[in-house]
Every structure is written in C-alpha cells, then in structure tokens.
Image 1 (cartoon, rainbow, N blue to C red):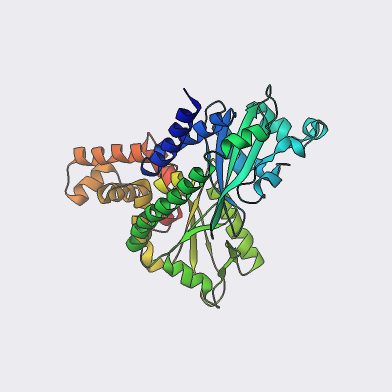
Image 2: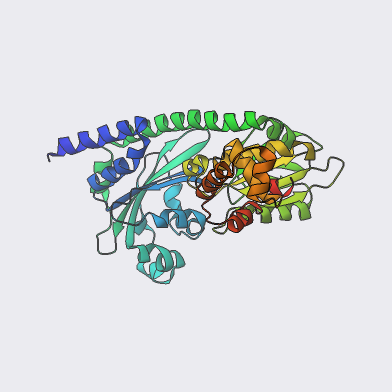
Length: 371
C-alpha cells in the first residue's frame, strides 16, 4: 500500500471512531504501526489531580492486561513519567534520559515493562482542555531499536487529526455520561450519589452530593478533587471502604458520620458489567449518603447497577429476608415457575449459580444490609 494510502486509511479510521467508538482501539493501533511502533496507547488524566481516568492499548502486539496494571500501580513507579509532562505535541523518547544501568535495577522495567516484552517508548501530550489531558504513547519490543526523529516525523503527519478526534470523542463521551448518570440521579433524587476511583478521586457527583460537600457544616468535603472526611478517624475509615470496594475481590461497607448532622455512608463496588465502569476503564466505587427513610431508593439504584427488573429485585429482597421461593410466590400471588425464571435471571446478572452464592454476593452490598 502506498504511503499516501496508508495515511488516508489512518485518518479515516480515526474520524470513523467518533461514530463507532469500538473502532478507536484499531485506529490507534494503525497510528502506532505507521510511526514504526509495535503498539500504541492513549492515557487520559484528570488535570486537577493528575490521576489517570482512562487508558486504551491497541493490543496489536502486546497484551492489554498490562494497561490496567500500569494505571493501578506501576504508573507511580515509572521513571519515565516525564514523558507525560511535556508540552502539547512535543515528542519525547525514553532512552534520552534512561540509561541501561537504571533499567537493569529498576522495578518498573524489571517487574513490569520488560516482562510484557516492551523496551522503548515515545510519547507526547496530544490533547488538553480545562479538565483533562491525554498522552499518546508508542511502544517497541525488547529486540528493537530506540525511537528517533524519523518516527515522530511520521506521527506528525496525522497528529492534528488525532487531536481533533480526541476532542470530538470527549464531547460525545460527556453527552453519553450525562445521559446515563442523569437517569440514575433522577431515580435516586433524594440520595447524595458520588462515583470515585480507588484513590478517592471524584469522577461524578449529583447535585445533592455537590451541595452536601460544599456545605460548611458537612462532615465530608471535596478537597482538590478527592472525597475526604472532616475527622481523621472518619477519613481513614472512608478511605479503607473505598479501597475495599475497588479491589479484585471487592466488598461493600458502611459507616456513620459524627457530628450534629450524622449521616449513613454506603460504599459499594460498581459491578464490572456496569456501562459506567467500562467507560472509565478503572475500578470504581459508588457512594450513597442518605437518611434511613430513603433506603427504598438505594435498593432501586442498586437494581439499576446490576440491571435488575423490579420483579427480580423483589425476589432478591425476599431471599435476603430468608423467605423460600414458595413462600414468596404465595405471598406475591404468582406461580413458582415465574419466580424460578426470575431467579435464573438474577443468577445470570450477578454472575452467581446458587441461592447461597447470590445471597452472599448481595449481602456485600450495604444498601441491602440496611433494608
């Protein structure tokens, strides 16, 4: 394929990904290959906190498993973090500042990058607005030569298009998230709802939560983009609950705030199947701050997260109240076969196989425990 045709294919793929987001991964892979890389990656950061909020590796030659591992741990060990801090559209090369001696004794290279087959990196800050900035990184295998100006010169052929596509993608993502989160906020209108990542960085909050955090008498606050508690012991407890809810074996929990306006705080893991978690590409915790009288709204919100129908949610609640399927069927005036069908749907949506496993899964969710 002629050089001009390759470039046209890349530019077309980038713009098509705005309408078909699933094609963005392939598009960034084409960008990497054209510039002489084995693979390509995009990472976006919250501008206020510098916390990573999105990552996508094309997976052309390297495993995409490392992308999550990098965000969750190794990004703080990366001696090449300066690659993330350069001016807009200015390419940097890892080998300019990292010697072989450093690489031979560095945890990031020895325990992470080299085992994934990656040795050389080239990166630039490709997009920036008031809220986020995005880094484009190109990767080469251990048996390759370092990147140089020839590679960045080829990347410059499409970098302006790449930047424009990221801007368009950001706009469509905002519209999508506002629509989905808005529906949840309306359903739980009397609930203060906050979404945070593992570090407690606030990714979204509804208006009620925003008012609560900004109130001078509140026991919670938004400090530099992170959810914090007023008292040290309260803050530490909240931090631990968020950590527990964003682990591989995630678990929910609850706490009570101190002071004149004592409130119940429920912290639960956002299910992996949730569209919101897939959009952000990171483990997330859902925090609900509420009065006891509003527990019914919490149950509906949990139902939304797992995609449960009202009928399925009633079956789940009955099991948590230690009722048998027959007792619930008689009490509700429906057939036992209908109840069994709803139970099978619960198993599928919660990824469980037995009633005991289902109950164990749901009892990790504080909203149910408070019922």
